[in-house]
Image (cartoon, rainbow over all chains, first blue to last red; front, side, top):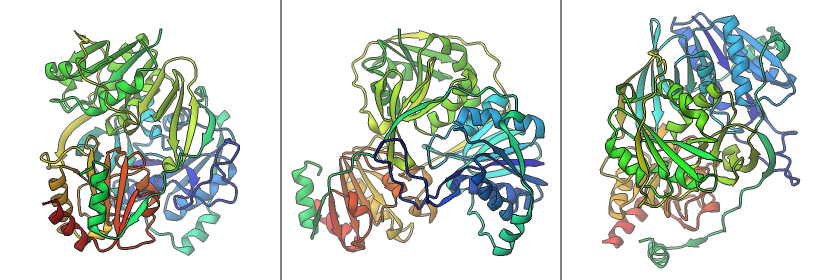
Length: 248
Length: 312
């Protein structure tokens, strides 16, 4: 079985982002960039399936500028067999991203696509579901466990009501949630080796896809900060404050 | 003329409160707001939906395949009726997040996720970067497909008298996705986290699953729902459905008490709209105190029993 994993380069989750004063976006120069944490989990899930003998190839794919190759190197260092870079400097929103992935899936024919459940920059949570729709494949989003039984995946999903289990026929799309696994640490020698591995580079012209219309960002602003609060010293003081507010 | 279609969220028995919040978000957009319910047997849910003020019509699509319906089954049915509407919305809960992108892709339109403010019928505000920035976005011409950030909108009032219409939809339904089971939280006797006006939440500071009982006990006393930080869920203190934050539930209760929660930005993303935030933590430098309205530095294991005792 071949597994395709999509990864996105995002501002590292530890960075406190800054909104540009002119409202044109957030500052990304000189900011640490990483693989979207959910995509990291997706790679780990694919590697674990390979190590368990359920898959024989893990392909990592990303769409974006040249700098995204850093994240593909990380995926290779973790253990991905191949890395595909679809190079573009254009803004690629989820529907276009899903169309590109669909075109790639048609060509490469993986039995399973694992993506992160959302990217922590735009917090959209769309691409996996859109890809599944375009391919008319099953989807199992927000996965916290995956078991492969022949041509079916049994996936447990973290949903608001609890844990839902679905059976989905392969090929299928799964999106990874936090508790699916703990991604492995990369050893330095593996990082060095990954630097020498080749990355296959493609462009949007290699795919015959129609770009979706864009959701246009008109402005970016800082959220209204909460008024600073008070510190109380005792439980008594806490409770009398809550009483005054009519909360107890 | 703008016409909104809202996909009802329900558990097969009752309408979820998120639906009435989505109605509120839709009210400035169109004169006509319809709710569609996909269900195997839907009379009660239809009655509940028809009673939401501001709803024009309730469509009920009763079909055995709609029992525990997954998105792969719902999306083609929504696609079949979509062309009558200018807007298609669902709440940005795990239900809507799973479903709406599948609908948008079938319709070939981009999606606006997690709408927190409606500026105009096609201009919306939404949070990005875990709520650390807000973007104002404009959807292109054509159907607007989106999810509504329920914490940003109050529940629409009751007392509505919408008409209820049975509706049959004939489309090919895939069999590639099958529902197996749902392991619910198992605490039906506590208020629902997303609907509760008070939430008591515990974090890593609780130390164990057993210690979490003091959170449950205080919540019971106060009639509150129980929430948790990701750290507490990861440590196995409490099931995932209690997680509050960027990737868990986004809530807006009147009172949120964060107990033994340090306040990572991902957690704060889930509580920003709480009216009053109380933080109890032994670490005076914990980031939770930066957003708390009332902070109390100290050992939760002495403070919580004291609060409980004082409440009588």
